[in-house]
Image 1 (cartoon, rainbow, N blue to C red):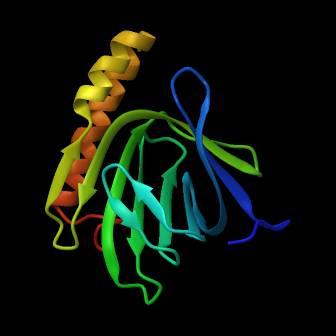
Image 2 (image 1 turned 45 degrees about the vertical axis):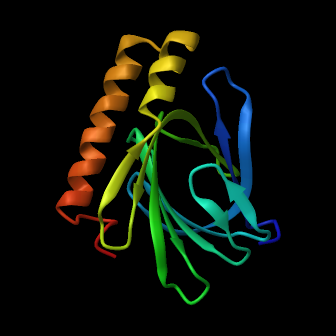
Amino acid sequence: MNPTADAIFVSVLKYDGREHRRWPARITKTAGPLLVLDAVFEEEIQHDLLGTIPCGTVSTEYYWLDRWYNVFRFSDPDQTLRYFYCNVNTPPHFDGHVLSYTDLDIDVLVAPDLTYKILDVDDFEENATRYGYPDDVQANARAALTELTRLIEVRSFPFNE
């Protein structure tokens, strides 16, 4: 997707404030605190956990401005589900142009059959010590993981789309 005047950017930060990733996206839906974005991978990406993400992969991204997680639905260009990828993070901030959030390391990879695998808990524990995550940040991250896995297990939105 080429950035245009009506496109926004998503900015992923690490806890120390440095930007980790940035990409253009378009808002497709807003409903209360929920923003749904669409983005398309313009080039092939090699991801540590996901392997190769081919050019043309569609990412439908669900961000709640009041929740400590987000959900990405990765699809082939024909909308066939590849998998869901969920991030535990601080609630995002949206200024009208950039949606930003701080990644708290814990991820959940969800297969099309909705089996899932929790990833990077060790990174969360290491970074909690390294960056001194306050107790409330750690508690909110753990609660977010519990809520995410419950949503997956009961096939609740957006895992029922």
